[in-house]
Length: 74
Image (tube, rainbow, N blue to C red; front, side, top):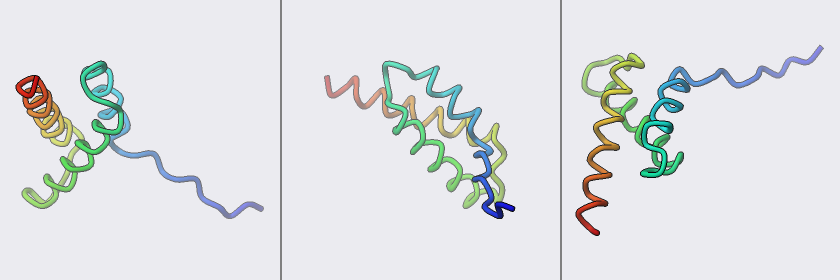
């Protein structure tokens, strides 16, 4: 019997997929993943929980700010 446990899927996998699609051509998948992770930890620190909807809203704001900064740099 194989006792190895497969890694549980991220509770934010759907969030990452949606944001990757939304920001395709603007941000890399790696940047989206980093923003989702940062949003997760930020939500935990501030509110004590990290519901996927909250994480998605925070990560989306991060990605919008990064896009704005990139556009201002030219």
